[in-house]
Length: 304
Ligand SMILES: [Zn+2]
Image (cartoon, rainbow, N blue to C red; front, side, top):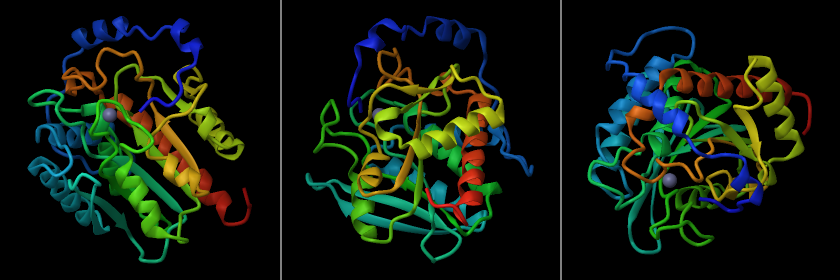
């Protein structure tokens, strides 16, 4: 996924040994029922994350991927959303499906996205808890409390590359397909969530891929929520991720992604529920909701 790795990163400390200590000291919350509250619930998102991870690896075309789509569809419909699958084949013939959810068939100005495929051939039982399930968990919990016909959700397939590393031609299959499918009917804004549930995460939006306009919204949201600017920061480069095809097509995109490069868990069996915590999911949900509110409230009258 890494597109640019500045030398700065080599010196700024990516060792997560303090995280490991905290993981060991913090038992996982017990699985529980979903609660009905008007606010975003990190506990609900945690329940979704655990349920998805229990399906095992959800790589493109796998039975578990289909099981995951059915889980998402069931909850989205229960929350009053219409759903639609858009299926296609990757160049190597693997069948893929994006799942869209909307409350109005009129094109929506704001698209919330995440990827729900997991990288193939990592380990038996690979949970891909943060790199896949966490984004879906946050969007699904947002879907419960969000009743706005101007917002569309999309759960993307094929973000992961088939080869070990993502490249310009391997990976982002679902987002590239979706941008092409929409033609001229693109959203005005996109918020993409990727790896948003880890303990002690540091979100670092890729500054090469962030317009001044979206950076301003991000900064305002961090301040409005009273979040730490160290934990909600900026990555001095760009990423190959699902925001990119939309950005290149002219959409104002923001990629909420945690620092993962150099970690001991990314694309390993250690990306499991042990590193997910409800508070982290809660913060990501509140950040997304704050951004939604900012964008939609100004979108009615002010051009970017
Ligand atoms: Zn990945």
